Length: 131
Image 1 (cartoon, rainbow, N blue to C red):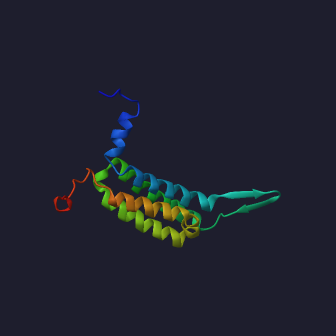
Image 2: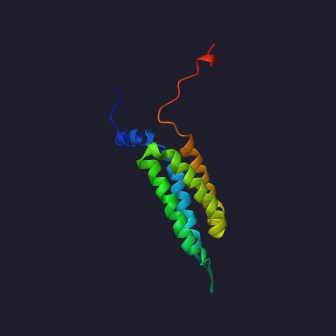
Image 3: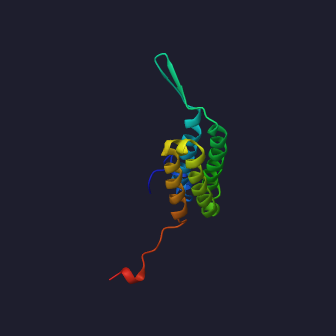
């Protein structure tokens, strides 16, 4: 019998839901939200990306964060969360500085795709593929 580990509970929790998809959606939300409010200082020059897209970025990031949370805590809603996250990530491209300079939208779209592709139990091998 294998020795119990401290990460056993987390591993079991992670395997019963679309963990990596939800993480991708949440990371995309963070990037979409961070870019419009970023300020870069180069010597004496301050470069700020504060634009009217900041309020749209806040709204889109909140929708993406809700979808990522729904994927983690309510896996039965994975289809709705994945579809809404995909639409929100595409809306972010138009409304929020190219969706977090494209990085945020790509993370969210990849996370949404992983969420939609996730299945709750491992697939059994197909009978027609076995010799």
